[in-house]
Image (cartoon, rainbow, N blue to C red; front, side, top):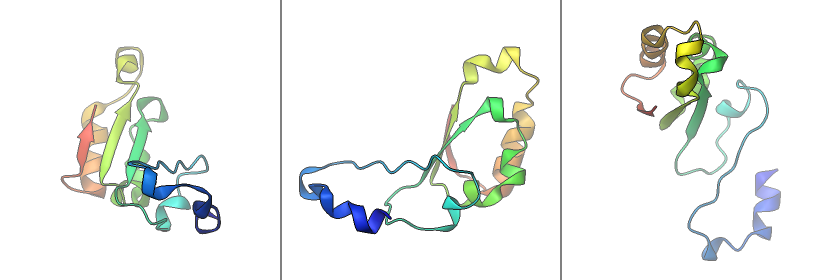
Length: 97
């Protein structure tokens, strides 16, 4: 789908093109879409086990943006466990919280 629609964009005039997947976590991570960098935006409200349950998503990421960290004090969320799962999926992946 991206290949068929990309010609509609003036790519030579663009510095950044963001392709957002709004589907489930499993399928898109398995397919390359011609990206230079793959970023996974992860919300702490999803639970700390996501890197364990969906390792392909995190293993394929060049950067993990951890979102909604301002809610941590209101959640039953184990940050150390999440980071452990993340390191197991992709050791040393760059992360921003």
